[in-house]
Length: 165
Image (cartoon, rainbow, N blue to C red; front, side, top):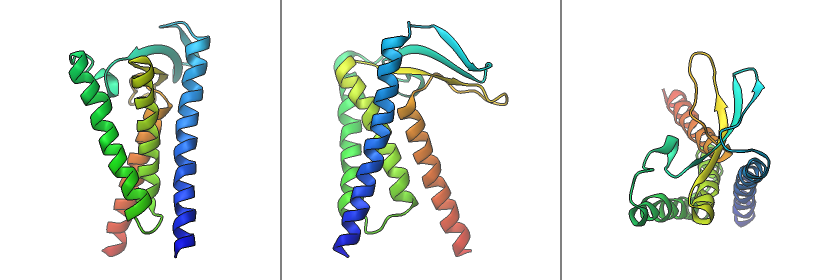
């Protein structure tokens, strides 16, 4: 049983490191190679690279919060939540499931953006997707990790409800 937990925890840590690394490497490249508000069409107008700094949370929400309160809302509170989620994953959660996978993606993405807020005071966003029927705001790889994690958890909930019916 102990060996199983060790491998589960190593897998979770690998997912976290992969998510954070992908996010930070992509942001570093964008910071070094792109000027602000430059647009590069990668796939017609369906995928556009453009560099912006986001002082708020998702899609700039909370950007107008005064600085001292902003640090609490954008750094301290998320760190507490992520810390508890990580504790749950590594210590309390007994097996590896879709919940574990989804939470790992969410934690990895959250840590990537918190790192930016601590180091730079804002988060570098650079990806814009236009899927014809809907489009995104300008996001980064950490945001994509959080979104993937959310959908993995939702799928896990759907699957568990469907099996019990």
